[in-house]
Length: 379
Ligand code: NDP
Ligand code: MG
Image 1 (cartoon, protein in one colour):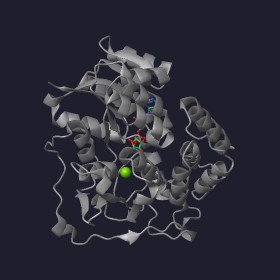
Image 2 (cartoon, helix red, strand yellow):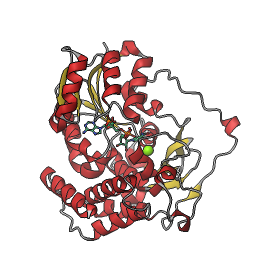
Image 3 (spheres, rainbow, N blue to C red):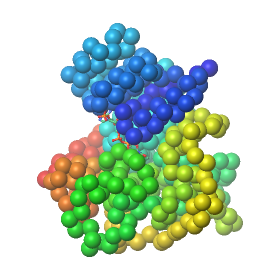
């Protein structure tokens, strides 16, 4: 039987690569629902190709436009409710969460409540409400299958292993677009320069997050929740080639690593086919051609956002929500040219300073903390 899939954020970097994986193995998959923001021309092509029963877009006007062009076979919804329906109200077995930002939280919770497996790309969801998401997934017996390449690597290294025997998780970090620059050389960098990632082609927000190392900070918190690992057993290692996607060290000091060319279609497909593996269009890894791999200890002074992320993770409660929301606002402001690159960390740290965390927050507390942080960071 075909695996039935819903893709939230189908027009983005992860969304389009997910559909590419599906298109390479069309007999295995049926697309049930697609949700996009405002890229209607691409969404219409996707509707034509994959014939989803339901689609959702950002707002009513766009929904109207899609309805007129797509015909009656596709149900068209919009807004937060549309996104939630796309996540939960179809026959999908698995939902790929590839919208960007904490707007991924409610649809992910809805999909879990509806008993759907989650192909988790949207890391902001776990950062903002890790305890709620992991508790609910556990209670529902729903798997959270990581798509983020580092977490997919760790997930693979832990296959069949006992968590008690893990001494640490080692997340690798490429260093992002400014890795060869000192802090002083970050003054006045442009948006275009920041968007030029050396190894990966990704959406704008995560590309900026990679340059500030916020992305790795979000991934540390994501790893904490996905693998139940305390923060002092999660380490970050600079590895400019992005060939080793991450590693696990066991108590006998044996280290397992997962390697491959930097191509997100591999971890995406693994989440779709787990526990099986299928051929991919990805080039095989040719280590002899690469010759050397490099590693460097993480420099927390060069990348203060990573230190802030660890601090937020350890504080817990609503603090990671604040870190994430302040960062989302700061990145959007940087992309609009309103603030400088180095102001991103300033916005995050000032917002964190002003927040009194709520411990064991419920969903309302999280929504309120997220709202507060967005307002504070926007000023
Ligand atoms: P993109 O910016 O490329 O894509 C975001 C997607 O979300 C687009 O399809 C966009 O639609 C959609 N979207 C925006 N607003 C809405 C809305 N209101 N309702 C429904 N959909 C909406 O992001 P990425 O693909 O790069 O990243 C997605 C997530 O995956 C992020 O959380 C990121 O951290 C994570 N991730 C990404 C990786 C990558 O390689 N790109 C690697 C690991 C994790 P539209 O364009 O139509 O407006
Ligand atoms: Mg990653």
